[in-house]
Image (cartoon, rainbow, N blue to C red; front, top):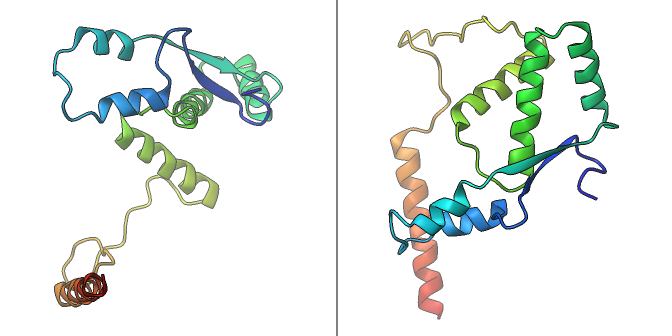
Length: 155
């Protein structure tokens, strides 16, 4: 029962590779670049299974029934598909777009306008970014390398 708690799942065809198998094959360093058999299995179609009893699917159905051109419903359906891809173990092709959509959803749920700009740093005039100074990074690196060196001496 793949769809007891999730709204959708992406399932490999009968002889296709699962998401985990695709990741394993893609991680092989000594594989041929233009392997016809590998490319054949990598491009097999998957099946999207949808749970019609899930609250998200029911809400999407209502949104589309009310207005088939609703952009919010389109974005939510796309997000549901992408989460099904990830949940099923497959790799997303466009991770930057996925991250942007997640950020927009976070802004919406927190009540932050989508067009609200990032505050600029007063000193430099650029957006403020919390980062460590190079001295802090070097100190941490030397501390961690000395710890590993001592651990190696004990062996």
